[in-house]
Amino acid sequence: IEGVIPIYDAGRIGDVGYIVTPFVEGGSLADLMKPGRLPLGRALRVFANVCDVVARAHAAGWTHRDLKPSNILVGEDDRTFLT
Image (tube, one colour):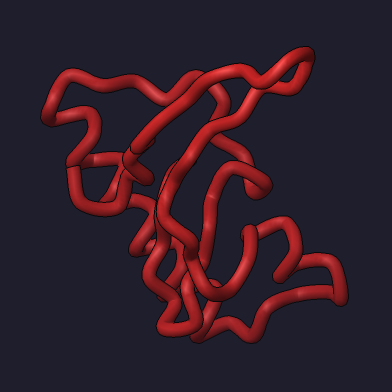
């Protein structure tokens, strides 16, 4: 599903677990919000993108049970990705 981060690999090395995913240049929505409010235009773009991704996931029968700013990655072009 476009906008949902795929998991390429997962495993454990000793006591350390790992997950391999694509790198998203940017950061989480939580990181973007730390300095304060996002400008209204950018906030609306990001929100609309999140809604699109969630709608596609729901249409495919998926449910995200922990949707929060730290689980939303925002690329430099404001594209959003659910983790």
